[in-house]
Amino acid sequence: MRTIRLGAGAGFSGDRIDPAVDLARNGEIDYLIFECLAERTIALAQQAKMRDPSQGYDPLLAERMLAVLPDCRRKGIRIITNMGAANPLAAAQKVRAVARQLGLAGLKIAAVMGDDVLDQVMAGDYSVMETDEPVQAFRDRLISANAYLGAGPILRALQEGADVVITGRASDPALFLAPLIHEFGWGKEDWTRLGRGILVGHLLECAGQITGGYFADPHYKDVPDLARLGMPIGEVSEDGTVVITKTPGSGGKVSAATCKEQLLYEIHDPRRYFQPDVVADFSNVTMEEIGPDRVRISGADGSPKTKLLKVSLGYVDSYVGEGQISYAGPGAVERGKLALRIIEERLRLTGLRCKEMRSELIGVDSILGGHLSSAAPMPAEVRARIAGRTESLEDAQRIAQEVDALYLNGPAGGGGVSKSAREIIGIVSTLIPEDVARTSVEMMES
Amino acid sequence: MRLREIAHSRAGDKGDTSNISVIVYDMADYPCLERWLTADRVREHFADLTKGEVLRYELPKLGALNFVLRGALAGGVTRSLALDAHGKCLGPMILDIEIPEGREEAPA
Image (tube, rainbow over all chains, first blue to last red; front, side, top):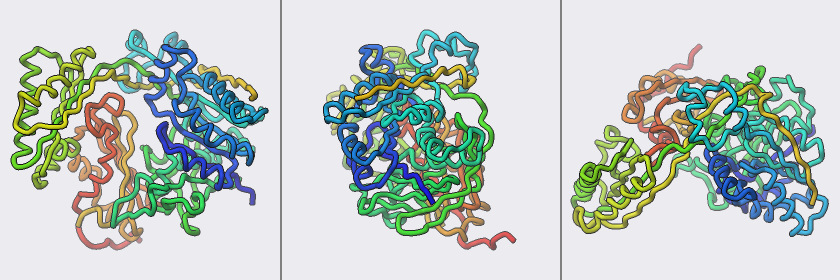
């Protein structure tokens, strides 16, 4: 039975590069797919593009392509990635330059455009899902509006012969669904197979998170050789059944347990996983360990798509100032608490306006909250942390500065101050009819 | 006993909503999990972090429950002031819940 082998070479922008080279070299894969675009990244990329029109794509694009293009070219492995971020065209041009630098002539590179729907959303009558306000309420602060595109334009690029497909915002699983539709000729309304293809994409899109990453818990869930964690391969059959595995000799492990954790990762109702191409249903999925590091997964389904696309809106939300300082030895917790009280009072005395404030002791109550940590033993050292939301960067810097001043003015033995002040880009969402996003594919050759 | 003895978990985030999966190591423990780990029990456990709605979805074929906690992420990863803005730590935290010893009879 014919299978298509998809390799996932990155699960986020900062992911390791050497396991992707291992996939290209030793994975016997047909496609190498890099998912690198978190929710907020595209708004930051849009800001970079506004400063310099040749920028706005993933900062590691060139490094990744330099590492994998020679093996991919030699083996005929096609690459699909959303590293185009806010500027897929410039990213494609960069890949072309890298290919030429490597002496790889005739490489076909496609840029998928049309996810930027800022003009359409501003001109339309849409409401923000999280707040029910009209999108226009964010007008002055809006940076970006990008629709999660489906498999359609990626499929067109593959049909036109692209060796490398670069997208901006697309649904993460669609990066994996598109080559399956291309190879198997699945119908546009074959909801069952489309749902299964979405499951394949969902399982693979976080790369190492299904091969033993984000999983190890010593003595309960041990994972071998995490420093050499292999990235996953999905062997997909025409009916959409998939076997998840990894390259021979790499670290990590693939088991039913690693696959189950990833199946439910960032899922709400497993019967209704909304995607641009289908509403996928994972509720009847079954898993079977069929060999070492091999898990067969079947039983996903799907129902008709909603014909709506989710749009992420990036906007300037606020500024956050933060400072931390450590206390150790007898009385560390009491001195940490005193430090936090001093900062709170200083901010009041100096009239600093904070829209939201958080003060806590790392090692005591910063993650768990007060109730769950109340029974824990007293730690030998704590780190006091204070963070506040402000209207201006200057006010955010003043919060950080007040923590710095604890060195000479605070409790005994405070050390190791760190501080930061930054602009906060918020993300909200809206839904648009799918035909509002006018997609296109631009091809170029090295 | 603690939930950790029979199950593992993983947390994910979407906006201000966290989802936490709880998966039994041995399918024979699933009826016990389904009986004792109710949405109310999880809401109570995380009462410091969210006053929002907690939903539970059952996946008996995987031996898993999926909890969805609305408003649990201090505004969500893009604007939260929390140290763990993603709520990644919520996964292990749920395994601290106490449940009764002993397996249930499997439902007929």
